[in-house]
Amino acid sequence: MKIDLCPNCGSDSYVKSGIVNDRQRYRCKSCNYYFTVNKLGKKIDDYYVNKALQLYLEGLTYREIERILGISHVSIMNWVKKYNIKRPYNSAYHPTYKILNAEELSLFFSNAKNLSGAGALVTELGDKFMLIKWERFKD
Image 1: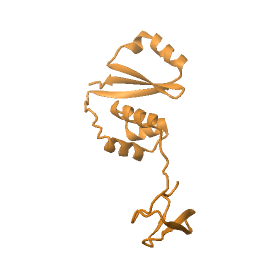
Image 2: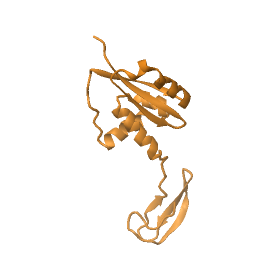
Image 3: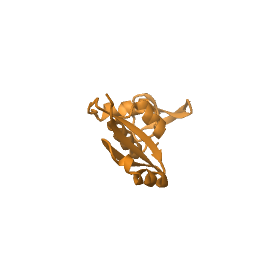
Image 4: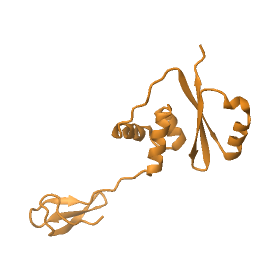
């Protein structure tokens, strides 16, 4: 990352002043402020953020989403807070999910018994498909 200005005074006159934790350190000539280059964090692709939030809204838990997408449940919780996502609460239904390839998915829908019930959603998940089905709790 290129440094343009001193973060303290905004001056463009600075010199290199050693290395700290494998990062270049600089000293501003105007105010004698020491600073380093900011670390760039690991950014997760927006596709996975959207997919995680969709799965959260479908009723999956943070840990289930973590197992499916391979993204930390803490990251998912932070995204839910950041985007202020509110999951609608309905205790009469609970989601079940399966990861299927295209052939297994077509076989699943060819059976008429699988088409009855409260609802189903199919979403792409890389080279496979995720089938989420809602079923009513039995009394």
